Length: 152
Image 1 (cartoon, rainbow, N blue to C red):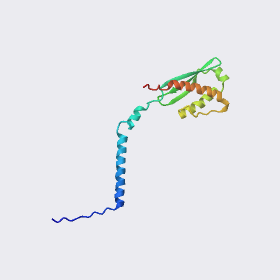
Image 2 (cartoon, rainbow, N blue to C red):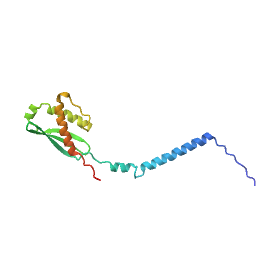
Image 3 (tube, rainbow, N blue to C red):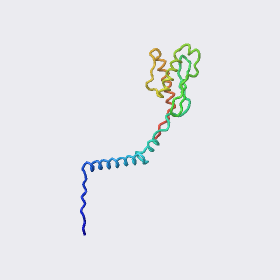
Image 4 (tube, rainbow, N blue to C red):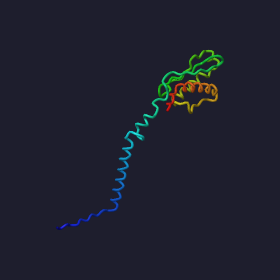
């Protein structure tokens, strides 16, 4: 029997490149399996655990008392957004005595609806007290609209 010996020549550079690509391929496969399997780290569990809405949709109000006159600040929200903020029961007497109340609310409402948050709201120094009273009333109404935390 004549068996011929075959000699295989491997270049070290090719062996190293092949090893690196095999390791990267295995890491890619493990990453894809980890991402798409349901369970602890998958996307499905995170979405299910996250609350589906921020607010309970509806109309919420808070009252401000100015010299025996009650003014309601009405906030309309849907599940994820603040839709509008308005003054209700605003009489001519209050408008005459407090001329900055409606323009201040309009300015605050535009900023809050744009940012969808009560954070980083700015107002001028000339109507800071009016704006502070309005912001407190808006915050009170929005607190009523928040979804209660799930009890475990």
